[in-house]
Image (cartoon, rainbow, N blue to C red; front, side, top):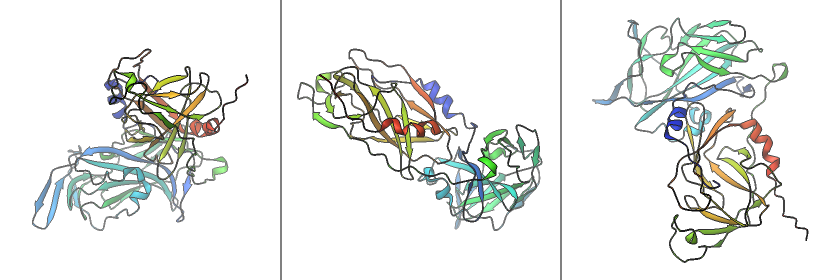
Length: 391
């Protein structure tokens, strides 16, 4: 970032703990089977329970249940396995294999004239006991009308019971809770009474398009930016990179030029493979220094992080000079892990870095809440605009 930014560890910890942030969807989606998606979330991450080996199977006791007053217990059979989990949550690739955490994701849909809350449970063992799904407290509440949509039933039938499930370790179970259908005028609801998934008043925004119609959210095409090139390996001295010695920093040139805009203006392009986030700057000097640290990240409202993969044409974790002309407006493109299409807000964070000695060094923090719709509308601001010089 320009003259580097940092944030406090407290701010990062606060953001990561906001697991009950609003979950939104720009438009109601429908797949080929007629299932309409209201909202979804990769969910909260729970520590993996202790797994024990018993003869030919593994067992675990789920520790995230705090419903001791419920005494009824049952064993389930033929629980639905979600085969499309990786399609619904592509950002979770690799997370299911984690030996430390179990993600409890969910989707809220309309199916066969009912509202269905799909609660996904990745099996940490072949048999898991002490699970709990729903009870008489489970409901959806319209935040505008106050209408309460009470639970109708669950699949499998575990209503108000602790239960044990058996499946192959690594399978993702699809535990369903059914409610009456939501009116097309519904905008904001809260989900209550699904404690294991941390839904005890979880706010969810459902945004319909005109006349109750829907359309799928589309990916963007990969943006084409002019990539900077290396002008000199070192500014003045042929020595290994040393952030305390600017004479050892790389010198880049031929940045992507754009029309004038406000410093730190951003635009976003989302594809199924990656997220492209452009950021624009005014170049105040013929040679100005920047840095992009590897731990820059995006965080959604559930606390899930999307890591920085690269900055196109630019070295990471090294201060460098960009050589151009004072008065240029330039843009860099950061490439992150792919974002789910239904996200409407994302938080952009530039963590702290190691101090360095340079004129004008600035270590103020950077935590920005970004509106994805606005960022997509900004794409036009980042079209290449060649420099025009009048003598």
